[in-house]
Length: 316
Ligand code: TXA
Ligand code: MG
Image (cartoon, rainbow, N blue to C red; front, side, top):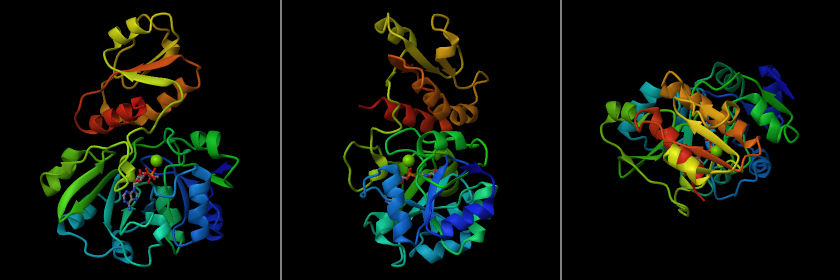
């Protein structure tokens, strides 16, 4: 059921049931992080492999120390300035954080979502919420309550509807190796913004099989129709005769029906492009196309995360 009743959502969560929650990045599939029953059903509903850990969501900066130890100075600076917001900190966990949440890793991922309904919900609960994106494992993340309902609606009792997500891409994940900051996933907080606060950071490339950092799996966000990236005119020639879908940044292409094209932002705004990317991929995926062709956006600000998702959607 889709609704806007925060109290009802809280009651489901208190009884170990799962609730899909709105955040500013994407919708999350939330359960009590301290309940092994709730956490186990998150993995179950998502069909997520148990080696892939979950992010813990809380509502206040002061609560970070409940979950983690040895917070580096740079992590404090980031938390102070960017939380709540589309940033996840990966830090050494306290014992009380269950191993099932971190998939056995000594580090836990924590974030404070910047969405009024999520924050209100969290303030009603005396436990944090473990929440991955509310999509089946490997598919595109949901940016509306309806997206969640389409795929998981009959498996969870409640979807809290907070409207379309303002950012539209998952959080940026940052951790520290010997105090050196490392970005493990590009996301809703641009790298440039992080560097303006703590100086240079290393952005780690993802791989197809790196058990150390499962969040970096290369093939992800994949629509069921194939997706190819490159120069649109050349790709259209190569796929002559096929039913083609397009994802472009600013302009419609005059040889493909407009209904088969997703133009991310005619105004050329990367913020708007990020908001529309996942919904656009879902839309094209429902059209029984032979192939989706896409071009990269400018590699700056949110564009780096948009391009990352396009590359992963294209990865085999
Ligand atoms: O914006 C977001 O971060 C959304 C919203 C719902 O908060 N959540 C989200 O969760 O994207 P998920 O599970 O779909 O992606 C989190 C990624 C996973 O790929 C996971 O492998 C990685 O973060 N991750 C989580 N905990 C980790 C840990 N302890 N060590 C390494 N990677 C971790
Ligand atoms: Mg996900």
